[in-house]
Length: 235
Ligand SMILES: Cc1cc2nc3c(=O)[nH]c(=O)nc-3n(C[C@H](O)[C@H](O)[C@H](O)COP(=O)(O)O)c2cc1C
Image (cartoon, rainbow, N blue to C red; front, side, top):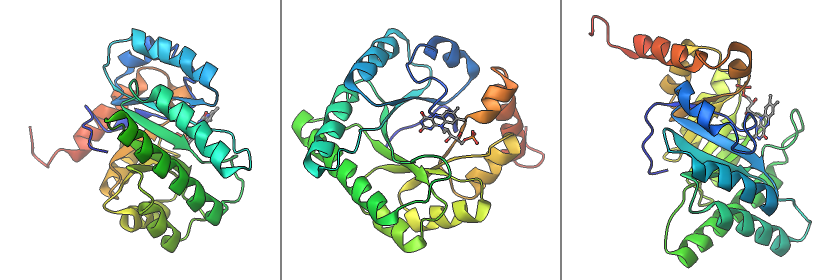
């Protein structure tokens, strides 16, 4: 995405969907915090007010989802409105295309949506004369390798792939390269982060383990990760 992060561990969307917890979350050690999913201009504007109040310790992603009205132009316009509002505040935007949990992935529809949000983001960049990277979030399971190759070329800057399956993640990293994969799903400890990074993910996000283990746990995960990634005998 053309961004640097202080560390590879991020908080996934859904924990803070309004930006109100940002002050407390900033103390937890995350390299990135994703706010959202935000679905309406009113909710997004309220969140932007909270986000703007806080100094930046971590990269801030703003996770968005526009209602699909069935009319392509109208849906694209909704994405444009949400992205345009968040453009100057977010370090990166996320188009949440992950759908309901466990629902089958409609590959053709996913490709159409990724192409739509990619085109909307490029058109905004031209209109604003500035760039805000866009990642797309979806469930990696059930998306064939050939479809990942098509998604890679849809003009977005990164993919946030939801999967707990090491083989699926490794295959996605290869199919999406040089586009980078942010891996989320089932990460429980520093070992899991190391495994995802070794598989080629650029960043890793957590949600459930943070809910279960609490605010000190991200730093413990990062210490564990550092010990694992340190060369043997290194200081
Ligand atoms: C209660 C709950 C709410 C969530 N809400 C969102 C959301 O609003 N937007 C989103 O993109 N993902 C949402 N997620 C998905 C998480 O961001 C993450 O992708 C998923 O939980 C897998 O990571 P985990 O195994 O570390 O929990 C939610 C997950 C949970 C458990």
